[in-house]
Length: 324
Image 1: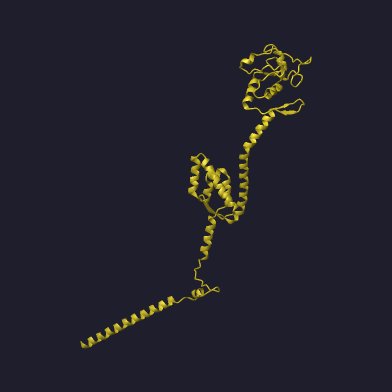
Image 2: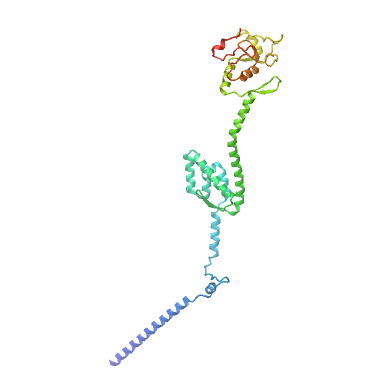
């Protein structure tokens, strides 16, 4: 038994020594690993060495080539054509319906623009489209690569910048012509109206040349028109046939013998000459009597060019006035 106990004691000592040796070896290996991790690699040391300018360049990771190519392709696919966008802005219906913003991918503002156009009967959409057209045109004139204004957010391809710039110049010219048309149109209409009134007031003078009649207010022109309605226009043949049925015709005092003539222009009446007969019985060319009435001074009483008898207006009590 004593010998067995001695053997057990020796075995225990050996086991304890082996455990101590294993622990020491593990600690040594851990220390060696720590030292290896702290020591920089040759490539890292070369990257950390000072450059010629004295600045140390930090080590940077290099991305893989495939990821770089895919990123560039994604950026190119997200870029839009500015020329196409400006063309959509220049077409009223496309901008009115928000197709420009749908093209850029701005779905929220595109739907809002379409909704505003419908609820305002097109007025709100037209104003919105005009503002978008101005913003995109200015951006194209400046050759910008991107836009971010009034809800328009997009990047553009560099190859389309020059085409968009040329299209923007054309758009500016068209907008200028539209503004000039709407600004000058009232002036042109007023000028044409004045010229028309001047032509209607032109009469032949004593020398046969055209002479302009003075301008007359509208109220006086309307009164003259009513007066002429009371002096029916007919042909000379019909006036002779109706002699005595409406009122008797009487020649002018200085009228020569033969075929009657107008006392204003001194032209001889043909059978189909348009004439007007006054209530005093004198007969004149229709155009001559009209010009006489229209040329009468404002505020004066219209009278016969021969005997100065008053010319009655239809419906007035003076319609029965006749010269003796």
